Length: 74
Image (cartoon, rainbow, N blue to C red; front, side, top):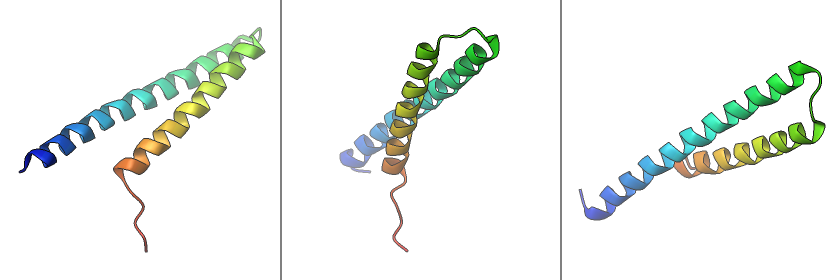
């Protein structure tokens, strides 16, 4: 294995770690939004901010997954 391939493997591992962290944050936000909504007396602005962050996370997750699994042209 050449040094370049070793660096690629390290980079892939770092990308996987980042992907897992983003997915965890996305799940945590989903739980937080649900908990706030269940209370009945919740701050619409806070929920809107959390949802916006959740959408941003979803976009980041998609970009990383696309990097890891490039589209296969059929």
